[in-house]
Amino acid sequence: MKVCFLDRDGVINVDVHFLHKPEDVKIVRSFPSLMSNLHDQGFQFIIVTNQSGLARGYFQWEDFQRTHQEILKQLPHPILKTYVCPHHPEGIVDRFREVCGCRKPEPGLIHCALLEYPQIDLEGSILIGDSPRDCWSANTCGIRSFYLSGKPVGDKGLPLNCTAVDDLYKIPGLI
Image (tube, rainbow, N blue to C red; front, side, top):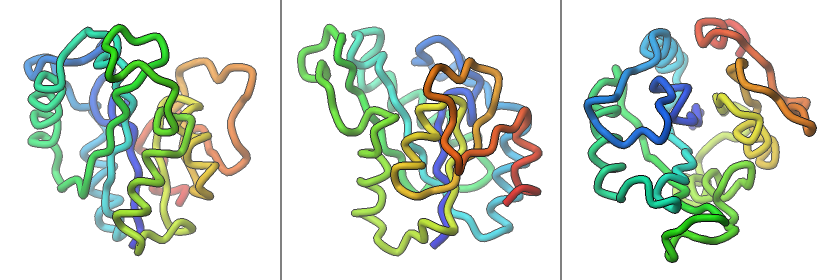
């Protein structure tokens, strides 16, 4: 099974600072077309998202769920599963304050998907993210990634199996 792992904020929806209200959801203009193109190529979709706003106390789990459901309603194809990391080492919510293995760039969210869906074809799968941490998470698992450029890359740079693109429209032609 080919999977397109998707970061959420900045790839699927316009990145709003700690998005937590359904009425603030705006899907990235080129995302529905990308999703349909990849669906036609046989990809299924899994979201892997860091949501440190939960650990920081900016919003509650119920806020996240309502907002996420609004995002899913606006997509042209179904999402197989969403994996969420609510942790942050400097969080103020005790149950989410920790250094974990699921906060990207750690590969824990992808590992959870691989445990639940062992039929995932790593060589045929991809990840699309808007942060180098997304791409490093994919790299650890042997998954090719696409970096939606626009944010600083940082000192660590991008992994070798990552392609930087300036628009989601370009990705299907690069697979």
